[in-house]
Amino acid sequence: MADQHYIDGIENVAIIAGNIRMDFYTFAVDPETSGKEPPKEHNLRLVMSPDAFLRSWQTHTQLLEELKSRGLITEKSAEGTSSDQEKTTLAPSFS
Image 1 (cartoon, rainbow, N blue to C red):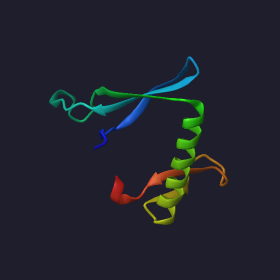
Image 2: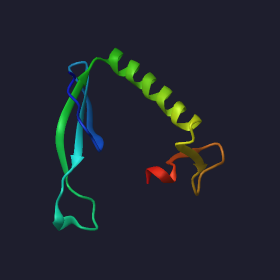
Image 3: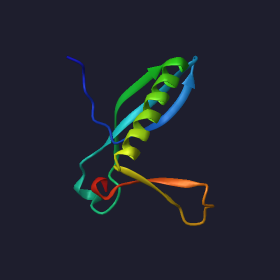
Image 4: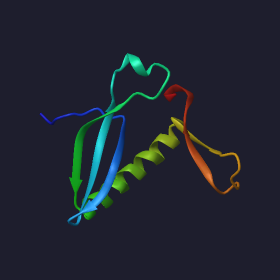
């Protein structure tokens, strides 16, 4: 069975020795940060070749289009931007 990791985000993306490296994090549970963004805990590093990164980018792009077609995310004009620049936002069920 494959390992599964839940992540809240990606940070520290770099190209080192010809490979793309990304650190994934989750938010820590800390009662001291009530009302503020919780601290981040590093939980995984992903290292891939540029070719693998491009294939994953293509997959993510296809997923984004699928989410849009199902109405799970919408695009709306952001304040202060021209109409041809749009900002992707989550549907209310994801906020």
